[in-house]
Amino acid sequence: MTERRAILSGSTFGEQIGYAGAGGDGGRVHVSGITGFDYSTRTTSAVIRELHANEEFEQVEELFERIWRFEPDSRPPLTAGLMRALTHAGNYVSGAFDGDRMVGAAVGFFGQDSTLHSNTTGVAAGQGIGFELKLHQRLWALDRGISRITWTYDPLVRRNAHFNLAKLGARPAEYLPNFYGVMADAINQDDESDRILAVWPLTDPLVEAAVRRVPYLPAVPEDAVVGLDDDGDRPVEGRADGRVVLVAVPEDIERLRAVDAGAAKAWRHAVRDVLGGLMEEGATVTGFHRKTYYVVERNI
Image (cartoon, rainbow, N blue to C red; front, top):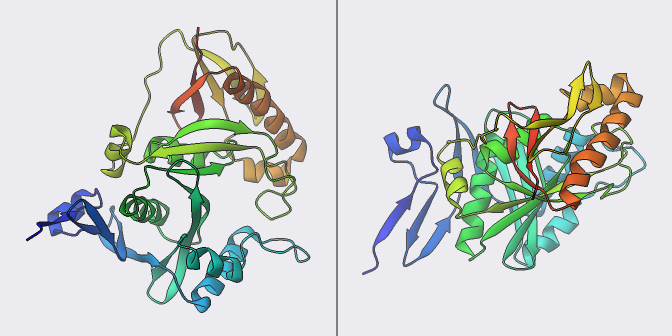
């Protein structure tokens, strides 16, 4: 008889109540729905599960429209029909539900070299749901023998950089200038779509610690130099000749796009030049410091 074991979500609360986000037997992981928790109040925040019905995909399309508020004459990047085709081909679409109301969703597809590429993740309401969606996605991938998940994100958004690098333990692998072209939605506001390709090695010790709610906070040596800083919402270039270079991003780029488009554009090009330039030279981004700075190690 094969021994069956529980796989915990990583939370102390989950361990205390015996909650398992998945079960395992014979080297396989079985994922169904995962209940998300608000760990500050210890209350259930959402149920996360795979989606299969056309009506559910329509809910995802409507959710993403509420989040990004696409221009009226533009088609959403992910339609219900496309999600139906993706899942029929074995790819990943999940939703987070607060009762009957969908409050988050994630869509991914298979890539090269045992990779799941997480194309879009959006959350409209609720604390910690984005993290729980990633946990569900990770277990789903492990169940299929997938060793890593990738996704892109805007390097100017501080909260996303902190979430991806510190809370999840992902690592930037590539800087992609204007990857999707100019984006006409309420969040991006016609900005160029520079992106960082993040890689999440699912069984890496840093990732396994992150799943247990242990964030990765990189050590910053005393001789680190500031290659780009924030001075009153304006980027100020400094030195980039140290072994470790700190690269700041603005406090709130989405607000800045609305109130000072010139400053937002200056940040886009400054981060592209400094962070993108360092990565192109072969430097490694090792983390995100004080929710403000990328920590970049040069190969010198």
